[in-house]
Image (cartoon, rainbow, N blue to C red; front, top):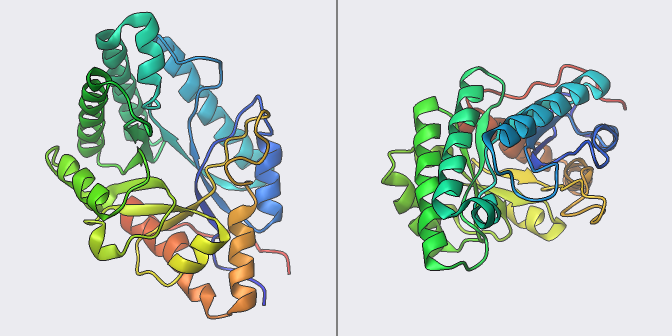
Length: 290
């Protein structure tokens, strides 16, 4: 059974690079049936940025890529901007920890300003290193994370969180940390969620699930909101990592082939979750080929 023509197919989190496949990967996504991408910024040069000008150039590159993809593929692209949390560690080696944190906070302000201008839709990735770090680095990372939540709160946009995978206790701790900043939990997205945690144990935080076949089958019946993502890195050194950009449309097609009723359930990650968390609904404005 083909996918409904009016069903958007949304990869909620990916990266593309002018040094990788770039637009070619977006074409592969489109040809598999994909319609909308949330494009998270990344470092396009070796090493962590060490000046605000580095982040200006990085965000400019993400926006330019988004515009090129829209123009050449007709895929709808939503940029997501923020300094990568792990950049703090690399920049501290050059600048010192305090100066590296100040740089991240300035880059968060820059990203927030662009979101206010309508050039991006969310602040991300923000959060914490996904691996153990020294206590002083953890404290500074949490300081920057708090600033990120304040910026997203004041701008009125979602925040996309980078951190280790979470169980119920982890979701509750993250929710407590977030609530202290006055940020609404329903707009906090746990990117790269690799395991299913019952909705009642997620404390209102929204998971963006890695679109592995077993996990998609498990979460497909969950209530809204939740998302699907590939976290495609577009890194020539790691072809196809984390998942290939065509994965989400292929998973959606396979689900509907196995169970036509799944088409309605897919409106959760592709329509209603986007509307609930972001405040807009992806619209398919072109005919999908038979």
